[in-house]
Image (cartoon, rainbow, N blue to C red; front, side):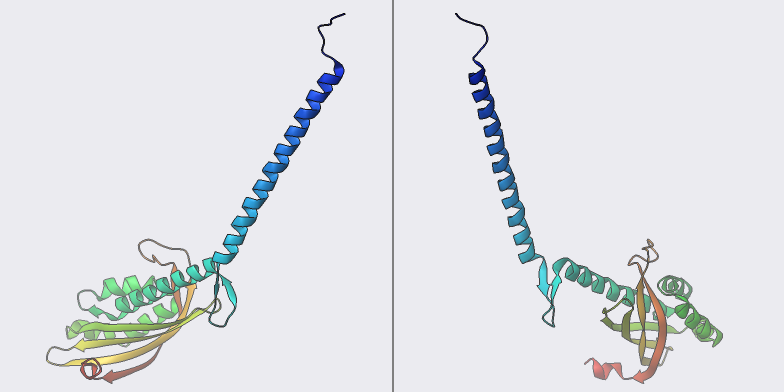
Length: 207
């Protein structure tokens, strides 16, 4: 006698086949995904680390960040020393205002001391021109307080007389929020101090 319903065993076989096919496909997909993750992780390990000068392994991303930071820090120091020491009767107020945004109270205190000593009054009275010739900075980026030493060579033009000086200054850098356009590098000079100032013969040093 024929029936419209399929044999229960046939239905069970089909269901079992479907379940097995789904399980096998799932296992295959999981295995393939696991291999992709392992291969990506292995490549990342081989390419995301670098060797430090002392032989230690450090993340490449950290190296890039440090390199970028050093470039910005040196640019920040050059910008500050250029504004602070490259002055004349026509631009000293504007340049000093710009430089004060790049340092903390130690820079402001030095500015006030120079002002009290009559440095800027003499600049106006005798129409002096103080021009920066070179700025060279050394930076120590170990730790959180980034120490620096900068050698700034500048000349003071008194009309008939031009004297050249070498200033050695030092301090630290800290990271702050960027302020466009007043502090684009997001760094602040702290503990700024003028260590030595001496008169030199710049022409003999740069033939």
